[in-house]
Length: 352
Image (cartoon, rainbow, N blue to C red):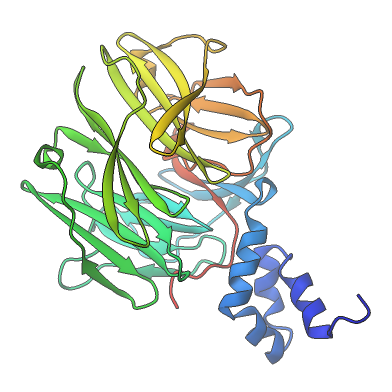
């Protein structure tokens, strides 16, 4: 250690600081400000921040927006900190669509505008443009946030408008949208199909595409973020004699799907993707069957080796996992009566 240059030692120490402490450290001197603002520093700091202890829960209700730590010992939340939105909004009517490395892609529901926002640093970037890019319509559009091989953060926006599908990519580096081709089955353009938000895993964005009735078609659409090519893979082989829901989650850079199926009572299985095929990890008899009235809008995340399933009405089910503790949480869009997400605290900026 004595032979290492002082600059290297300082760099190694600062990349291990919490995100908010990095922000404070920028005011120490000009040299530190320049160092902490480099893309190399931000990238390394981010890679060291993606740990379970650095995860936070963001909760939005009609009156407040708050951020809370998760206490893994008792699976509860710690004391909350009130967050003030740095952008104009209408009665906290903000939806969290996607997240990656501390950035949230959000929609202002009163204007339909898309934004990138880092709730830790409070920095944000509007993605809407005068030529109608960057506007999101719920139940018709799908959003995926990802980073490519050149470390450029991008947003994939799939838009369905009157039977016409358009696919657009926003680049943080060039601060603009562009159209890309998307050849898929015509029926997926129908509003009868529900598109999930994209889940980024191993250089690919994954979307579930499910037909909104019993026995309907269910597939997974994959988008290679570097070649910008799409392909379709099958859904896990779950029974199709009831309603089907598949929620995707990246666990240590391996794609998993929590699949629910049934009619009046639901069964739940966890699958992992190997190549283009799904392998069942476990079924979930430890939790009681969830009635259809509670099943609507189930979301889940993982912590301390367990999967927690929460219904829209706030009922909690725990699934014991005989696996190593997971390091990443799955972002949820609604739980305990709040809108929100689970995110990691970083200094990644929504703009260059």
